[in-house]
Length: 186
Image (cartoon, rainbow, N blue to C red; front, side, top):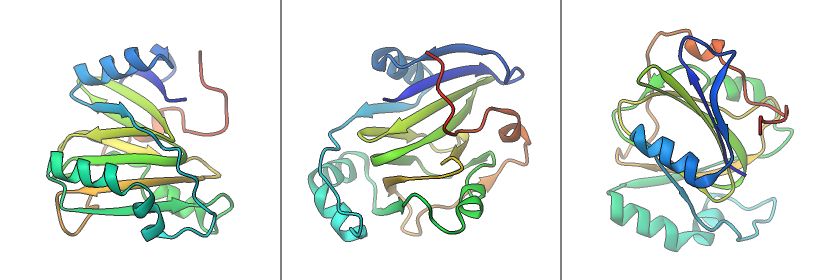
């Protein structure tokens, strides 16, 4: 189940809000300019399914989002549990950065946490299968897949060259609780 935790950006030890209520979650994110939607992610994928099989399973949803939001390319990130080099892969995304384009992700398996740094708040959004998150261009954020990642996400881009990050140079990502197997607050 998706979960939202909101912090003041100067106080990572004390959440202002913690909720798994989808209406509250989507409403708070909308006020911050972040789109969160629940889609169907019930198509079973075999362990050996490659990018093309994942995209084929969700072809209608992918086509609709590309058409409706002007995304020019898509790809799939599939990280199986126990992957070699998980720590290095995790580190590629756990620094605060921005993009010149929207960053949209549709989770079809597993989970990961986006941290969005907006207006002196940090929104930690744990996304799971069926969650679509669209982070607007220029939004400071980072992503944590956890110490033992296991997820599949379809990524959407307006740029033909895909994911390009600009680091902010801020150390803020290291101050907030990392995503991992610990239980989420109620």
